[in-house]
Image 1 (tube, rainbow, N blue to C red):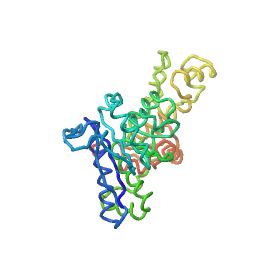
Image 2: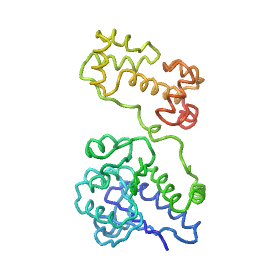
Image 3: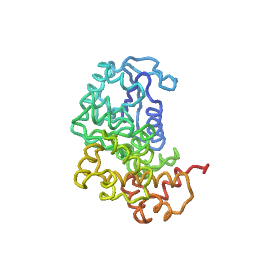
Image 4: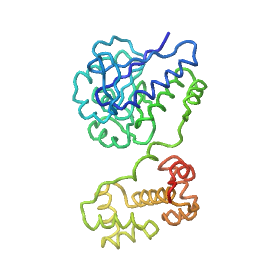
Length: 320
């Protein structure tokens, strides 16, 4: 008996969000003699559905799909702002979710699950670029922007685009065991468990821009001089404030305490040095203001869940 996987698409969807998981399930079918997967595609209105890159796929009409469904998988795409307003799409997802053993999303497909009320009071993830908007638009959803995928009960969510492959491999592992998922990953030449989270792929960590011009200038100073004395007393003197008042105002206007902001800024400085220079780790630590290789390692593990050496091997520019 095959497990029925229904992938929900829409005009302008991200093709990789659909194709990646579909190929994981298809590869698993080559390796199991029973309890494989039957992948189907549905859209609000059936027929040819054009992805964001122009390629068309054929989908059944969502309203005509009859349950039960084993896995309901909702993809993402750049057209998402329009899709969450499509009552037929959102309603169809909500209806089929009631027949499914589990529900999942790839990338910003999480917005459709949230709009359907399926993410309330759950911990979820989505593409790092969309995480802030998901949290602000759906207050009862707990958004964690770093993991490549999250399982919360019978709801699974994944981060941007190709993390749909990570999610699908995890689903295969849950259904058939680690060994089969490992063999699928080997066949597709991908990691079974990619180290680190999606923050390692994101742009430098952002905070709120201070309303106060002196604090904006101080923020720029911190980012430009990671090796300087950036202690609270030194920053308060530069801002012309008492330490207590400075700490309170800085936290209110940036959303981070001075100490946390300085660590993030220095972490980003170290990341840039690892990507564009061949400096040894002790030099990177010193020039980024982190002091020692041990501190550099701890900060990288805390922020990106990988080591500085791993980050350099993956992201170092060939043109320095």
